[in-house]
Length: 268
Image 1 (tube, rainbow, N blue to C red):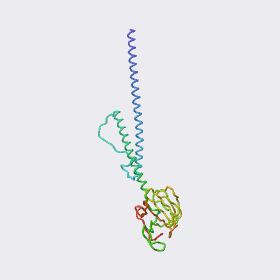
Image 2 (cartoon, rainbow, N blue to C red; image 1 turned 90 degrees about the vertical axis):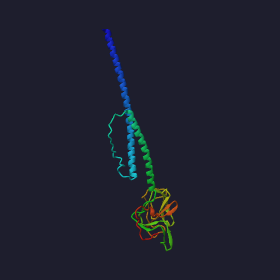
Image 3 (cartoon, rainbow, N blue to C red; image 1 turned 180 degrees about the horizontal axis):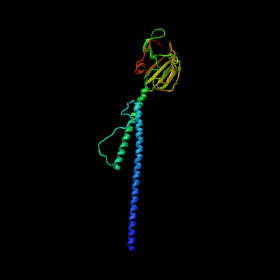
Image 4 (cartoon, rainbow, N blue to C red; image 1 turned 60 degrees about the vertical axis):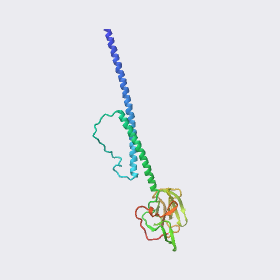
């Protein structure tokens, strides 16, 4: 009797040991699975951050490139579908899917970064090329090239274009650049020269007052001077010149796409 009782106790102890071992192994499996889930969650968080970055970059490029909405709307989810029967995905397949998505994000990020650099350079080139009027709401009073000298007859080669202005009217930079000269220059009177760093230099002459100094960095549309009639001049106006690679050129083609009004008055 006592022997059978001892044998039963031993079997119970053995079963209990097996249960404890199985419980330990199950706990290890659970911990391992949880660790894999935590690692996958961390990678998904990184992918979500990459997705947010790519969306922000795409939206910025859409604005810079002036692209229309539709396929370039990064806030609108894309439609998906299919008629395949769903099945349980194995962990290895899920991990490979995440790896593939990570590679796709990396490639897309590189491509968008290159596109951003190209668009940024294009925007810089555009802003550094003369492309607007040097004074608002005005018109041309004297064109580029040969004309009669307004000071007593004879011929003259006019190196720029004159615009109607009143004393004190703001004279505007036609492109981004650096002021290379600001001061008095012979018959030009008070002059501002702006170097745009791409072979172009623009000149604004006969000003009553200079608003910048040599070395100043200016943006397109900023006020560089106030119009006047200093130097060799018959009245208040803005004399505007464009130099391309050291050679004076007709500024007319740099005044924007729209028509430029032309007056009849000749200025100096």
